[in-house]
Image 1 (tube, rainbow, N blue to C red):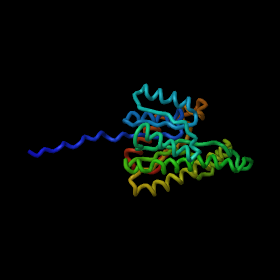
Image 2: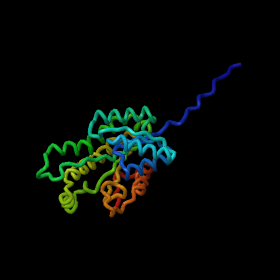
Image 3: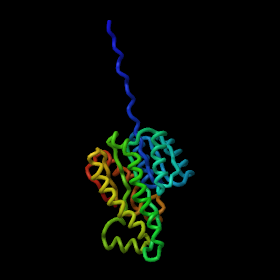
Length: 240
């Protein structure tokens, strides 16, 4: 009698979201939103102690999480982050880029080299993370999600605001990042990888910028990111 071995039952591929630039606002809400949907969560930021606290809180909520202390302006560190996150938590299905750097607040008086740091975190870190994760992202038909900022907009009133706030370097970084998002979307569409951003126009509650007058709820922004990931229909949406 001829017998055959039944096919192996494959466990579903684990899905991991890597959050670059974790903090108490948008990125933490994104971690909770995607964790609620079954994603393992990798958190990356400079401060290891804060990461440990954040991952402990996520684990209390039943979300598998791990922190990785990382300088997102260091391309070698970004590459290690992606490799370490994959090894610890499984294949990467979503990359959320939330990192930014200050500096070059006044383009007339600042050391011009300060812009290297600002643009390095805003654009080079993003591109480096995408390149490092691209194999998994293509396999998963995954998403690259970016937190944009209203200072990216080419509007005279926005430029005047950036000057008044001493945030000229940040405006340059966000504008460059906005263009990078569009270019990555066009390039990765043929690979089945979605790229999109939420452009946040206003102050977010619970962040370092919140002086008690912030009006934007991070959980609502996280919901918008989840909609972008699942619907994959537009590349850039304003919030606020």
